Image (tube, rainbow, N blue to C red; front, top):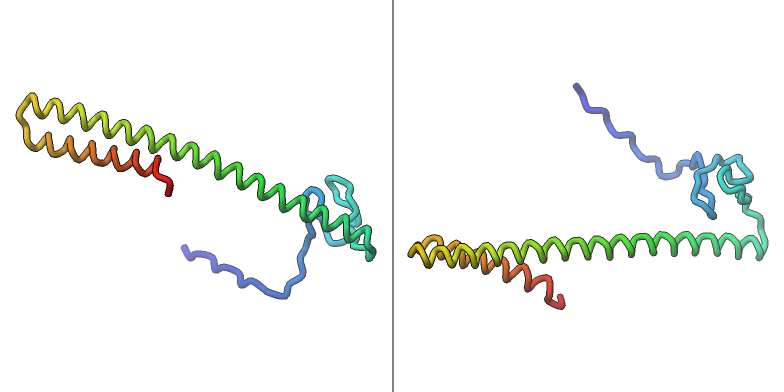
Length: 131
């Protein structure tokens, strides 16, 4: 089957809808009020309407920024926790294999154990470093 070709994007096209500055709901160009929150969509000239539109735009941008920042913080906490568990697991496994290699006089298991301890150390060091 042939893949459908992508439509070229027209740069000077008119939009089929406009977004409400209060709630972000898409509305038809012919609507005078938002269908969701009933806010006026007409762009009247005047200082009061300009102040209202500027307020709505700044509030919308601030809400988007707050949402993104909270997601990044949660992702950073989860990621740090996973790497901490991984580092501790690698280090403990390396110590266990090293102790068993000493009791069995196994050189290859000792090298693997040192490698595991090294990986665990580097993982934990990366979490707690200031970079």
